[in-house]
Length: 68
Image (cartoon, rainbow, N blue to C red):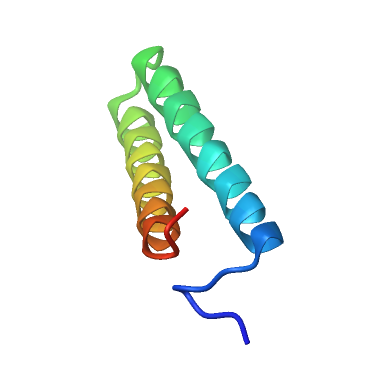
């Protein structure tokens, strides 16, 4: 049985890919926010960027718990 401290290699690989996707998405939202003139839309993009950043951080914590 797979647990957070004993993840299968394919699970670790998948989580690493998802971490990278979330980091990339966070940067993309942030870059897009920088180019916007509408403050309400800019704020929405910054919120999305922060959410993606938190998701990446949470997944990195899970990976650290599995010693990867």
